[in-house]
Image (cartoon, rainbow, N blue to C red; front, side, top):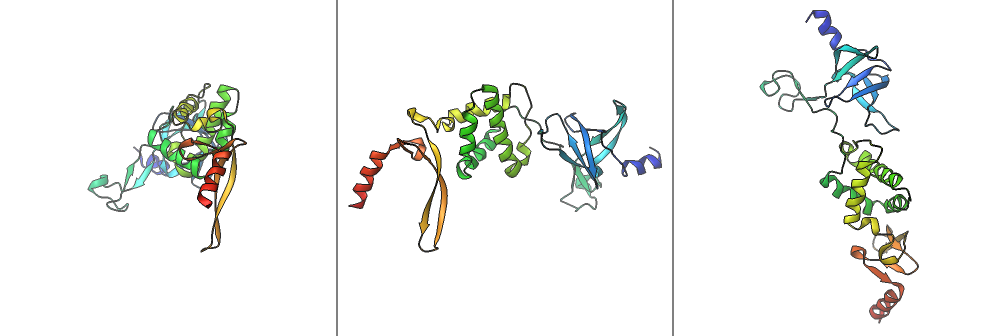
Length: 244
């Protein structure tokens, strides 16, 4: 490689409309470049966002695509052994190459799914789940569930954002069946009863604070632990019992 080629590789100037190929051979289009970051739209990128790629992690693909330059994404992380200086652990490079962007998934990772359902229960997002499940169109229902998953992943597990985009919303369908198996998808119409989410709170006299949470409440009663239905008459009976 000539000296000028080595210099150019580390001083790349990618532009809007050019292409970047990741570690999985997915090709994205550069929307804009700000500073040393290129914002790229890959086929699996959410429709309302772009993927930030460090320009310093790119190398010239030495080819053209549709008349535009193609770059290769090399995600680099500093070597933990030498702090970027260079050692035997990193072959004197000072860095290691990562696997690049996470592999798009067509069904939920089981470990991530557990975190997702915990988030649903704790963050008051069951209302969004109810709305998604009430959609009559199956395809739109699955798409709505994918959107809820993306919202969770965006804030809590960025590597889980990668969803295979298909017309049939394969990921959303798999998520629906997992929720159904766990009975989360039946929480709002269990045993013929319908529920709304209501904000409830418990006052702590010691701290003088009220801890707020969400509860499933309907005209016939409420949902207790493990989605067990408790009627209003049963609640009144228990109140009378424990107040005496």
